[in-house]
Image (cartoon, rainbow, N blue to C red; front, side):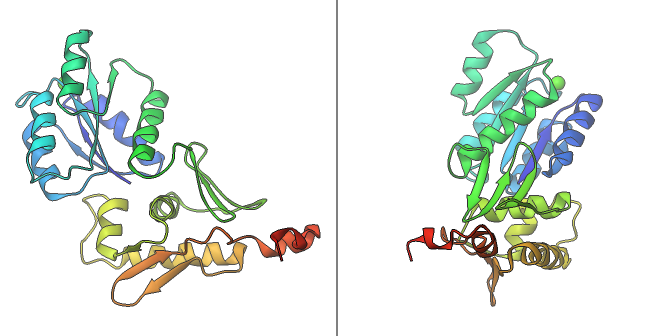
Length: 246
Ligand code: CA
């Protein structure tokens, strides 16, 4: 998931982006309204944290533009950050198309919870845990498991698997993975997406014994979306393999 942090206070901007990166999001930063609009027009962000008081363009104006101008991705979630303690401003921001708001000062934990909720709304289900067969990814605890086995992943592999599990069964091109899982510092001609898919696959296969991410030649990669995808060795170990209706 890729996030744009729009914030003109350097300390707050650094704290927000560091916190979101620690949770595995790809984060770009804009410190004024114009550079925010420039980035929003070029990149496809899953979410924007949008400061309302910016030096050049008001955050509400950015909100309106993103929601009405077809240069921008309509699926982008907008989380307004406002120091204004005025309920009218917040209501107006929601009317302008923001999905949610936080009033400064706020705890980073609260920000991360709001971000998770908004991104879940964008994908599927209301649960903090994404599930495909026996494979589970807990977005809040940043934990991946297969039955009782925990799968150890790097932050980037975790982010990549979260994107796959948010789009199960869909063919995802390398370009789309780069756009949603990496930030703007990545070289667009790099093979980093292919390499990271490779290491993620190997780690999943080592625990699950199956190839969960398949290559679709010429198109990209697909996470197999099969509810019967279960840890067969677990079932056998526990001696209840007859439970599966067969
Ligand atoms: Ca500000």
